[in-house]
View 1 (cartoon, rainbow, N blue to C red):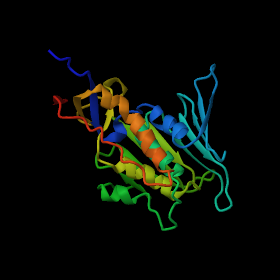
View 2 (view 1 turned 60 degrees about the horizontal axis):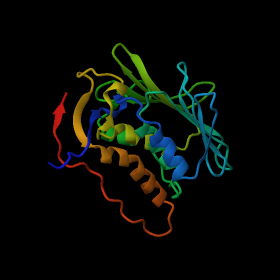
View 3 (view 1 turned 180 degrees about the vertical axis):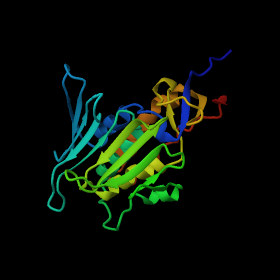
View 4 (view 1 turned 135 degrees about the horizontal axis):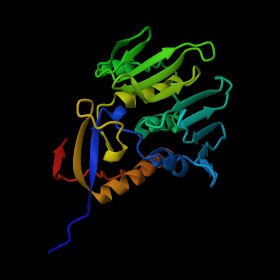
Length: 256
């Protein structure tokens, strides 16, 4: 009898903002291997630093139970002051990756007006507060708030239960709008993200939909490599060779 291909259980979770943080390698590995960011770490500290080839951007991953875990700083440029973005530990890596992918895109950002609220409105988000939008399930909100220290900064806050904060993302006032829009577009995306059960922010079936499916291990293991190849292909001068899809064949699934 031929051997059975090895499979692993994968949870496909919606809404994605309650799926948990995920694997940091989804962000750090492509930045290094596909975008040329250099890295440094301290064996005595649980910290990772990645700097862009032009040394203008620095991404820091530093576990801190009392503050943001991910921080992206960018130096001032002739047409823009220095800016920052930061993300809490349970911010899904797919959302942060949308920002770093947009930042490292070789195509210059368009000068056309960019509305970070646009994708959220199309996804049915409703007005919240003086200048914000809330998700249909009311567990996430996006606001642009001014403070004396940081006028017109963007805040994305996810809560559950009795307003218990799950994670928060912050974008400084001078963050390029197309990067904020990349984040909110990923936030509004209805497609599920895959996780392992122990990494989920909540297992409450009244809040999330979780479908557990057996997937061939080769497809799970190859997803990051496919992502690296796709991002590296953006920098080629000739059309990249299409990357074969790793969509898994039909498998036995169960909804929880």
